[in-house]
Length: 148
Ligand code: HEC
Image (cartoon, rainbow, N blue to C red; front, top):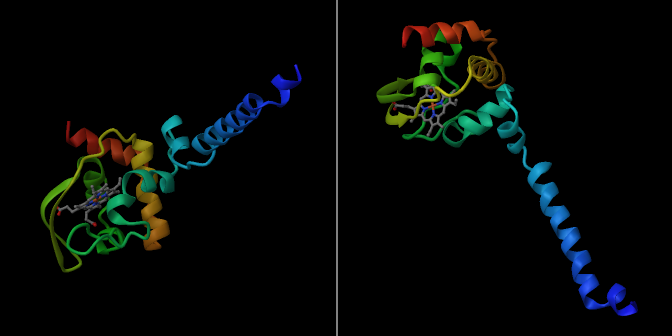
């Protein structure tokens, strides 16, 4: 009896329980992206982090010669339909972003919901470009409609 409770096996069991608890917590609570995969999150910032940041960078400045910035006149002027279209369907071939030529491929994101597309564009507008875009889910649906 004494051996069972205080022997090496018992200690290993405790360590195992503590370790698996730690791993469980770090997978559920510690990873901000796991919350997005679980719910159909439409927070603009979360969507940006998950679907745009790898290429366009957290501050939106892009990568010279590869990924154009999402801080540009495209975002600061009246181009909402263009922004929706690129976000949904991607872009390829030469594109001039504020005098820099990019010739690369951006993949489509048609699986994003209308709410998610509106939210991510409004996030990039407001937080990265200091411009309130006011993109509505209905605007996104209208662009989808033109491409069906
Ligand atoms: C795999 C990398 C990649 C990801 C992820 C990505 N883009 Fe892009 N994006 C590009 C590239 C490359 C271009 C330029 C394409 C070309 O050269 O024709 C571009 C161009 C753009 C443009 C037009 C040019 C500009 O900067 O104004 C917009 C708008 C845009 N992306 C928005 C987004 C949004 C919003 C997301 C997230 C939902 C996103 N992109 C995710 C690579 C990416």
